[in-house]
Length: 113
Length: 315
Image (tube, rainbow over all chains, first blue to last red):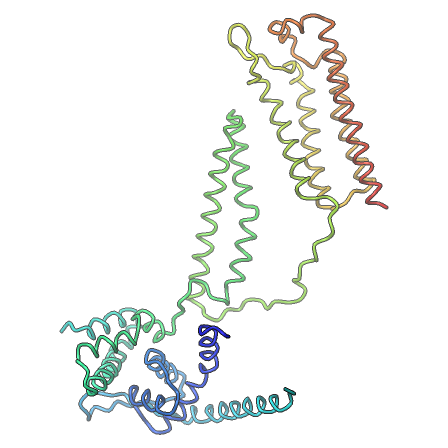
């Protein structure tokens, strides 16, 4: 039986890159930090708040997200949206994700059990 | 206003770059309030919800580091190997060198064996300094320039596979230590032979007159022998050329010693004053003969032993 710690580490490694992909997809529709966190969680991408908030900033710095302050509601919120640059990079990432899935499927079928 | 959230924000923003502090503060506060509201809406006590949310966000320093994209390590993988390599290189010889220089200076000041202590202390100090300053330098580089232009590793850097050694390091060290002790004993016996004259002065065992030429000459031969041991280790195996050098060095030490003993010039004549049986000429010449014989036996044994090793390793 694999230890829980080892399993958790590998799952973490596997999931790490997908948070960026999921955020870029989700932010095709503009949203603010906490709402995005909830949406991702609802869709099976549980992500820690202390990971997501700094990540959004970093993606914005890299020009993959644009942001806009909305002050109409009860508290000021920063809405993020996937930029054109972010969109084109997202497509590359999605292609690669699909390629990984294809490769894995091929490998599984090719290996006799 | 000094709620937990305020304190959390202050702790986080402390180490976030100043130009974005306000913006991050506003956004983070809104996010925290969103999270608390969500939980409190589910029927939870507001204070408990706040506590829970902040616990979930975790250590503010870690969060701030994530915002600033700062590394939570002293020396990261980019520089670690370069740091380690340089540290090993510097520690491999500089502390020993500094310690030796200090010890030699102390000896020159007439400290005798008391010179070892200061030498060791200096070597230790130098090692600590090298480690500290080198590490500090790398820590600064790590922070100043996250992407390094370190030379790529190449296969040419692969070290040779350790050669099969017929001469072990332990033997070499043992030989050098023996030689060093012998060299150390020559001056020591002059000042501290544990044989005292009636007035309490120390009586050297060897004739002090020998210091004019023979004892310095013997010390030179012993030093040359120590160098020979190191060279032999570097070469790694016996050869007839090494054997010849070894034989010449042994003869250069032994022949003068035997000659001095047999011509009654080795031991201090003053010894006879304290050890009455030495004053007897027959006893004196017997002791000298025994010394010469002992030296000769060691010489012959060593030559045969080295000869056997050389022949076996050449075969």
